[in-house]
Length: 275
Ligand SMILES: O=C[C@H](O)[C@@H](O)CC(=O)C(=O)O
Ligand SMILES: [Zn+2]
Image (cartoon, rainbow, N blue to C red; front, side):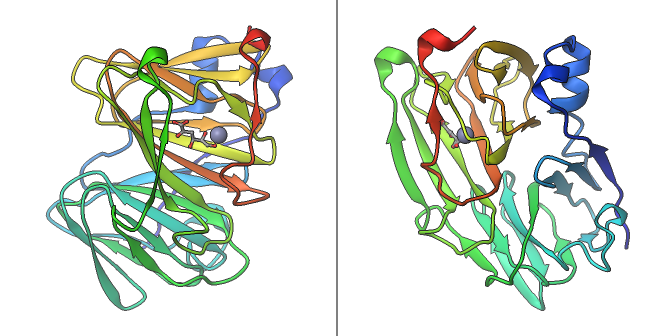
């Protein structure tokens, strides 16, 4: 079975700063994911991260070959992280069936073969190039690392749940998890940071009906924003800040790929340097 991905090329900050709203969205915003009965993939040239969704309906969905990777199977030289944002479902890979509950992550190692997604899960799929096979492992909420950050006074009180992280599960370059907010807090990743050696992708979900998240990107001295609806994603270039403020609380899945797997390797941006 073959699944085509939409390709997004990597562009530099000098080009990006000249883009209008639609131009920014064409490069960095990903809409139309989570279509029932379909696998939807976007192949980004930033660190060659693939992001997408699989929402099986009456029949299971199989992710096997993607022409964009030029390999016999998508995982031949790649690893994968799968976050279920829907009801508990099973994912079959490498001859084993894994029950993945809402908010749980299945890490799938390089060379695992085809991945079969079963209803009623609603799966967010991430894949990065890998250089060795790490064991496939289900990461439950309890197994993840939970980091408390922010404060009520700055409207950024939140918990960072780290699922694919060196202290939780071994991976080659994928690091991923999601962030949840305390009541009344709406700001993620502010104060903001850069990590030019790693790109990042965000999926915003659990945004209540009629609410939106304003996602901020760009070089610190040249910021832009995009308005994000529920279950839409953002490709964050390595040179860009990545932060957001919601008109309500929300959850977002962050994922990184690049030169290291050190979550804390960030260059903080001083508030007075933002423009
Ligand atoms: O490099 C790390 C990523 O930007 C996110 O993990 C940040 C985040 O989830 C947050 O501050 O809320
Ligand atoms: Zn970051």
